[in-house]
Image 1 (cartoon, rainbow, N blue to C red):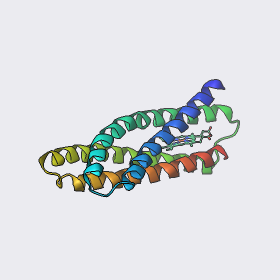
Image 2: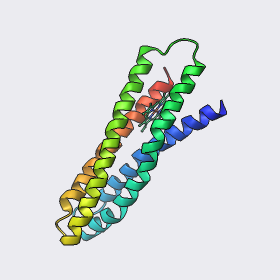
Image 3: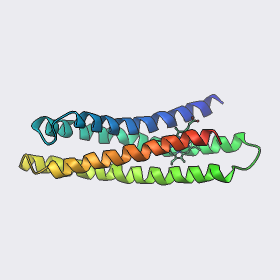
Image 4: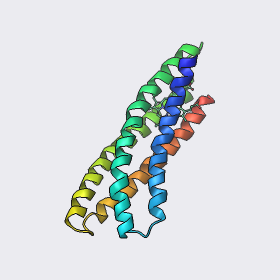
Length: 154
Ligand code: HEM
């Protein structure tokens, strides 16, 4: 029972962390003048950290998600209702796309660093791509968080 709660909490916290890092980037970036020196410096400093931090939830969420599924199966006396399995499947799909977006964020970060090293304007397109990627991750993650809470009630 304690292990089940710990796994569930780690799962939720990792989900919140993933959404939170991306949302914080967007919030901070939106407070700066777009494409200014400050904005560029911020993107160059924050994006590598955010990407590396987000590897943790990308690894832990599926493992703890599988743990949640396993422990929920053990606790139930009846088979999972179809709605439960449908929501889990949707969460897996959302997670898959969040992982793809994270991989794309690493590529965009690398391209941003290389382009900014050549010229101040060069990396702007890649930095804008990062903003879009983080926005998509935050949106998908928020939906997954909502579905998780819905799951807890089924
Ligand atoms: C491989 C992907 C995932 C799987 C297999 C999975 C699986 C599960 C399962 C089975 C539960 C229900 C536990 C229970 O009712 O006992 C759960 C709950 C939850 N999940 Fe996921 N999940 C995945 C991805 C995510 C993602 C990406 C997020 C958020 C970004 C997330 C957030 C949550 C939340 C908030 C709960 C509700 C916890 C509660 O209050 O009881 N999950 N997950």
